[in-house]
Figure 1 (tube, each protein chain N blue to C red):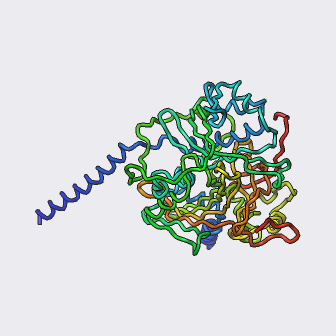
Figure 2: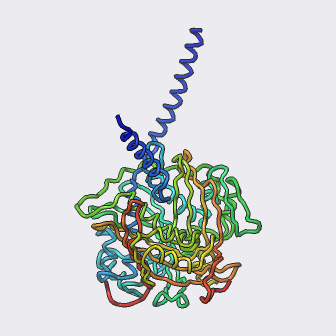
Figure 3: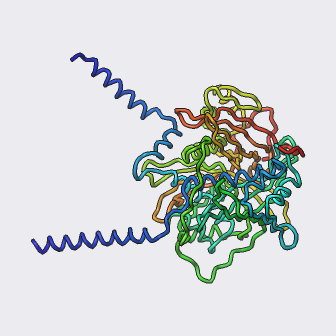
Length: 189
Length: 341
């Protein structure tokens, strides 16, 4: 036999390796979603979407004395508000519940509008990360005009528990523009 | 030795029984009653609502046809005890009243939570009702009002529809009082819900759940790539096909798109482009979609925030070997008008 089959085999092997290494980020996410048992499924994606949306409801309503919000986190789950003095961290069920019952809350308080939710599956099918924008509005607040209060984005870590997907860690960053094009008016800052 | 072996077998048996007990417990707990496509299709219904109401398309019937034949809308903020509209004619009349226009955007819907119930599904959503100035003019835009929708959905031969939708205005809220008895564990899934039969048939082009999710993700990445722009516009440009066209300003090709993105304000923590109501539809050679945009200048260091721009994007998506990408993306500024679509 000549060396040719070996060369072709080698070429195929190299191509196969390249195919697995040079894959854009979105394609990688897709592959993880489609992989075998224990992998990240479309329903995992839906459940993480639902988790993020429920967190806005739980935070604004203060349901269950704030524990509806706390129970969206793992038992050792953490929320970090980088906009608060020294970037305050809240860990554990009681601290998180206290966050969610701070201030005025109620079933018809709509303040945290989350959008642009990006989900990245982890390699093990039981963890994921995500990011979402949030605009915090004041609507229907007695004595105040309806307005955007503030906003920014969340960086999230999710974990699949026996209760379903939960936040392991959520970090809030207030919006801040570092680069502003010359010659265009910058809003008040 | 034999005794030890027997003990081991008994122990193993107990462990197996313990596991069996767990799985039996799991089997008695309610199974998921909506599949992935149900969630996605209900979400699509919810997102279509804004367009149908704000455009008044088809003389209001595009809105009315989002409901079942006996569907109801209740505005609890209308009159002293609220007002209910039932039936196609009354719902259509509702959707053609007030400020409307083919390109008008006002109802921004987010935080859509969907749950299965016997015979269908229920849901709740936030809605921010913005008054966007003509031409998308931020200076003439404001947050008009907003609140929540409580929904009941029904799966009909035509797809998911609103059986009822009730609007509640957002209020001030009050300090949270401790409940009489605190509930310690996460809420269990709703018991006794029945499986929901799906009505998916016909020969029109269809998208899989994966397609929907990947297109959703493409669009969700867009604001991050534009506002945070970590790599001189590369991530932004790579959301498009190589021959893509972005309009306003018309920009073609990835290099030009990257340059355009880099000229926009950005920073690792910058958030400006908020997208809502992402409707996705299958097309012969891919998919098309649209979303509402409100660009908000978030006040830094406690300064007031303001709306910069409002309108909607119209997209054509292409499925490439790299995944779904924008083939065209066109921004259309909000404008009122009486002309029905």
